[in-house]
Image 1 (cartoon, helix red, strand yellow):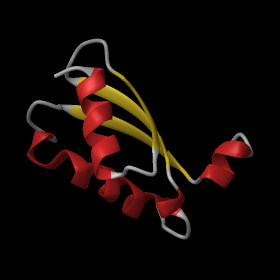
Image 2 (image 1 turned 90 degrees about the vertical axis):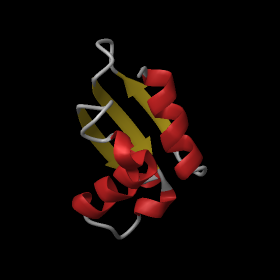
Image 3 (image 1 turned 180 degrees about the vertical axis):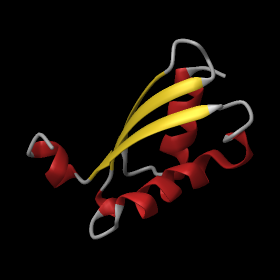
Length: 79
């Protein structure tokens, strides 16, 4: 597994999102996902939306995924 594959999977599942993924060791990843779909949702709901794009890879090929999930407005305000 590599960062570009994880990024592509999230992007396919959330086509309106801007996604950046880093994970040099191939099992631990950090992702920034900016999506208008996050508006009005709590962090846990946002994370579940992202995890849903990765399916069975979570806990398997992807051992850990640290998420930062923002709306475009939040991202624009530097939050």
